[in-house]
Image (cartoon, rainbow, N blue to C red; front, side, top):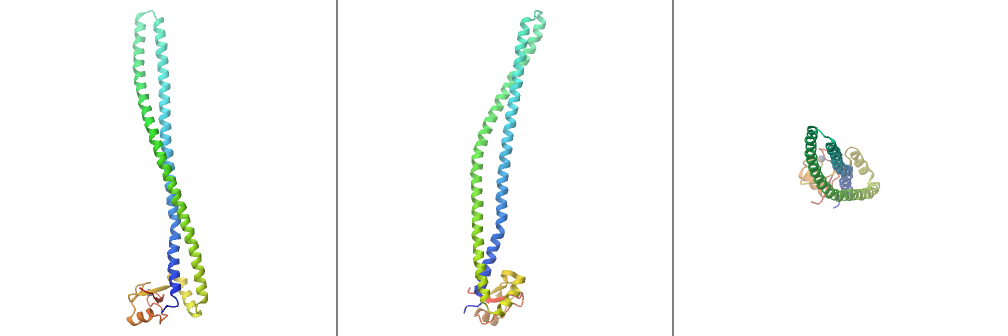
Length: 232
Ligand SMILES: [Zn+2]
């Protein structure tokens, strides 16, 4: 025998599950937004690092130009200088500058190699970040769509529930609404294995059987929920 409240019970159970899922969605969307933000920040930082390295290389190149200019001027001066010892001093100085220039050029070359490989790395990363972003966008859109579907399911079920309630025996409805005020969608509990599934209180075998057969519209003595039997 079908219990008069079983339809309400199943609607309430479904609404409870759906409300929980809907409540989880904003958190999941926040997580997606956070992940997108992290990706963007990470990318920005890498780009800044590359820019800094580029600036350093340009600065070194200017320094190299400066040294080259000094060497050039030194050599010109050397030709003009007649006293040998003065020319020698300049020659030492020039040699030192040339050594410095050579080291600098080597360093510039190394930095350029680092820059090049970093640029390649960033480029590859950008591709994977772009793919990840698309994936996150899709995930977010799916989640929103899913949530819209949940919301429309909920509205449909809520409507069905209202209709059911309006057609319910007045006394039963009053009892249900009183418990619903405190316990919401768990106002009706199923009896399975001789116990109330709302609070776990055990029933006498006779009562459990009566409720199982739909003969009794009782309440649980433990939690006050309306009890119904459901098919196992
Ligand atoms: Zn109970």
